[in-house]
Length: 78
Image 1 (tube, rainbow, N blue to C red):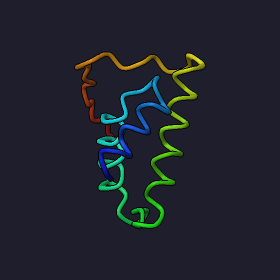
Image 2 (image 1 turned 180 degrees about the horizontal axis):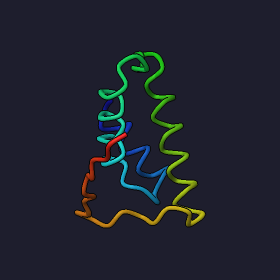
Image 3 (image 1 turned 60 degrees about the vertical axis):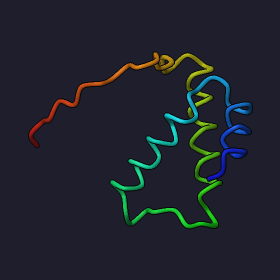
Image 4 (image 1 turned 180 degrees about the vertical axis):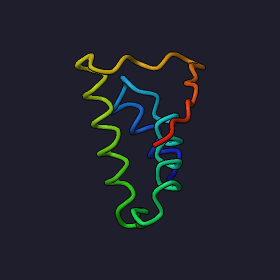
């Protein structure tokens, strides 16, 4: 991913924090290695992710993340 890509996505999807979303995508890909994206398909994956996130934030179904906001992980037993 190049900086010019990030700048385009920030302009296209202003409701979200593109850099934070990219970190979340990286973590998701690491946690789901069998669904890892190819060089050819990664940009489509990113745009789809950002588009869905933009829609959720725009409709108000998910509150926008506050700068520096962190969520605690609470383990559960199954």
